[in-house]
Image 1 (tube, one colour):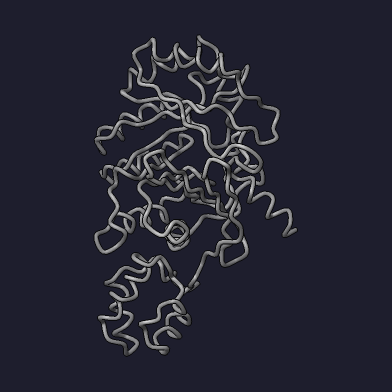
Image 2: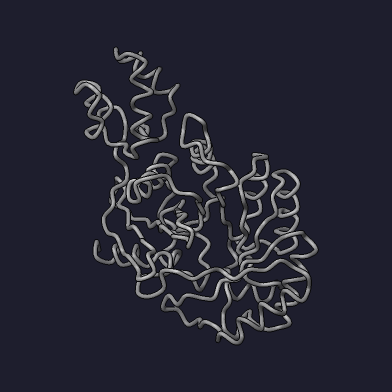
Length: 344
């Protein structure tokens, strides 16, 4: 398969230009279109000669991602349904903050193999990994949508990113590279369901990216009700990898906890969660469940507040995710499921 234009750095493009009879300075112009004007479509690169644009289209996959649909919620969250070069679909979200900053929530796979029982993203299983170029084009689709680079990135969309390290890690490098998008690693968070081998590889980068682990339960019995056996690692192994990440990357890890009524929302579970987080110097982010059509329910407001107080009583650091984009098609993966249904 051809390489993706969006994934080529300046050095690689210089070598390609030279090998194909174009001046090497054209490489910087191509990169400026990708990183500064947020397009990987050669037809849009109007300061390039036609022969160069034709060459880029012939030798590279470009563009690899197109915006098929935009869903906007009343609280200014935009969800973009993106179509890939092979007709598959993913989603990304643009999340605004009160101070004007914007966060992109990006996907790393087409579907998800983990299959958390409450989550829409994995309802149809895993189709394939995203390539480095597709992840970068997903990012620039968001930049083009808002007309600038975002302030933060969270890889919390569709897929288990740490099962796609070979493609995700080069994309992270491009996002923070000086001749790339020049973002700070501290502004980028990668989420995992607790895939320990991937967590260990991520720690091996020894860079100040943030890591978020979807724990969802403080004990094995409860966690088994939420996450299927195939990719569920013991909590003790996950917490050992949390300690390793904090040591290697120098960053406190976040434990994500989706609150499900009658499943993992008791005061006793809150206290157990708080003790785990405190012992491993992690912080907790509580996520009230957003219904996706499964049998799970969201706890009452009173129960959510009681749970949060119980966690805090242990001395652990705890926050509750600010909810935005609630409503029809709001949960991650629902737009994709709808689009796949229409395609069939």
